Image (cartoon, rainbow, N blue to C red; front, side, top):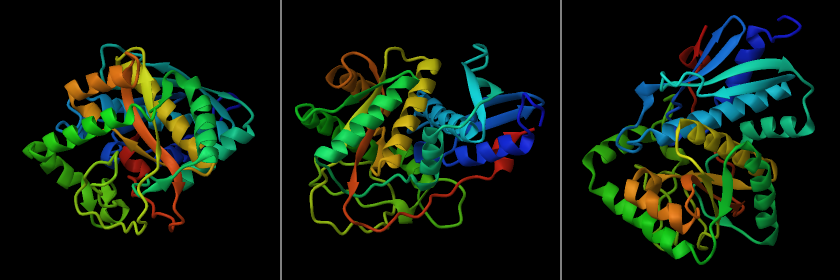
Length: 321
């Protein structure tokens, strides 16, 4: 380490924390290039789930989540990350270049870093109420600083959104390539470093107004008989290029970590956004013409046991020195 730049072990420690970032089907589609005093983020095209995410939007979004996780982890370790988004327009996989300078960590940084360790994608039913909604509003206000808007899904918009979610699910049930991809990345046995383990997947219930994605081999027990009362928000951007999608990922990360820090459970939902015509309908029904990049359901878990971690790849798989 020099006075003006962190040592390699500090950067690798921050990347290790950033590995806790959620991603589409836990595909972890990012690579970090660490050479001398430069740190760059790249998308990993080998981890593009083409049937689920044909336009690569969720891949870029996932990398944006990892980028924000890294920025917070570095801040807790005493370093500010100054980011150039999409620094090389000729390279579609080069997403960010980071310049690091010393800074003092804040209480917010430390709290959000702790939230990285505790956050889970919780697919069980939630309860809501006045206090959880205030907490979600507070988390959304913080997240809105990162370049995308966070819009609540109103009660009046829920039936339309529910219809579009169900249409997406119906189309995907008849899509053989989608089903092959889903089976490869969900309902997995323990000991695999990627994908969604069966132990983290709750079964879909037809009576829920806004159901989640119908993953393979659900093995997580959700014993509550109450209907799901989660609140929903949508991450929207005024543009739809790589830079906008990357910033949407940073905003999504900020929302998830702030919500976790406040005691809320969350889960990201993107299924209908992978279908072009359905995403366009959500754009005007929910986002007032802005581009929807992700949806999040949030609430308070119904007194259930903590979820196990989902697996992550090791640093040797994501860092190039």
